[in-house]
Length: 217
Image 1 (cartoon, rainbow, N blue to C red):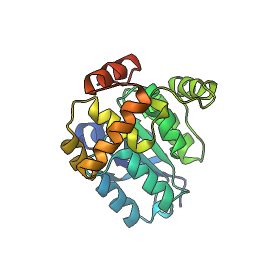
Image 2: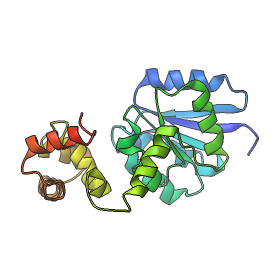
Image 3: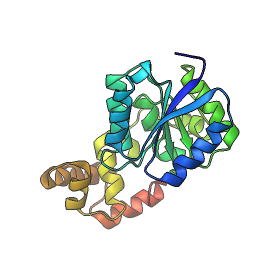
Image 4: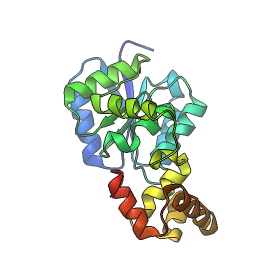
């Protein structure tokens, strides 16, 4: 390894990847060595580079095709626990930041973040630290303040939350199954658990619930 921070960018939008590369190119100590536009491609590229042997950091979008970004995160942390993963998203911190940190991410960064904050996040994460924006820190503090009490979307498991998010986007059970690689009856089981945990009776009530909790589309 050299002093240069070697980065892989995983995002399905080329314009976003180009924008990130442009920002990182301003830093002489950061080099983008690979990019990927799907979940499977991220895993393929990381493995080809030897994980933390060839990379210092993965910048990973949550909404990746093929394999969900949070599932990619879990796989990377299982295979390469020493490899820092900085999650990227357009979603507000209250929706995903706490979940990402719990799954092992070294930070959560909104794509609209100031370039200086983005470079600060890259350097801190690559150096083994955890980058917390003010909004992420507030989301974590709120989660700790709840004392682990069950209630709200935080009561859902990771997979339940994936299904919940897709249901509130208007996806059908079959569409969700195809996207997550699950059988339709499995998705239906998750849906039933979600309705029970959220105290809702149908998808319309669930959508209204999501809006109240700031997790609607």
